[in-house]
Length: 172
Image 1: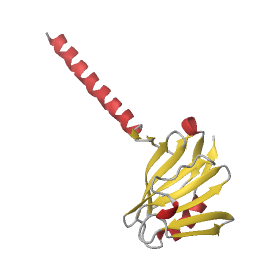
Image 2: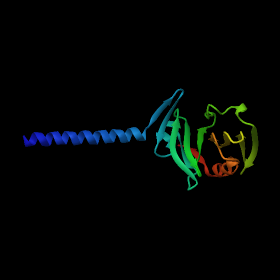
Image 3: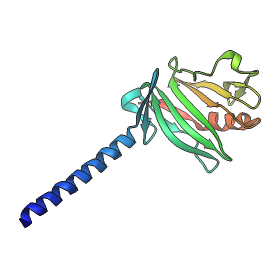
Image 4: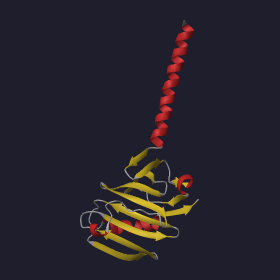
């Protein structure tokens, strides 16, 4: 009888450990289908196996706080940020020719579109006052886009320089 009780206790403990491991795996590989795209959450910005590239540099400090790494449709990296004091933005990185802009990124969505130079790269900033803003640039084999639905006034100007200078990807 005592052996049977220990056997049941061992089975219950095994079941609890198995459920915990499965939950950890699911939380680490959170795959979400959102209509047309699939997002897989990553623990680090190494998309080598799925997309053939990895990020070698990306902003992350006490004011620009990295929240999550995603891979969209196995080809576009998306890094979600909180910008202190409480704004949100996403950095997208893709190989040249594979970048897809967010659904609400379209030409008529912006009142102002400007191009300027940051360290030899042509940067295109699109903005609607008090609303969505986007900064796009290309470097080497990759395209980059920072996008925010509700940035603070002129937030993108300072962030563009910081992101352009501190974001890099390479083939793996």
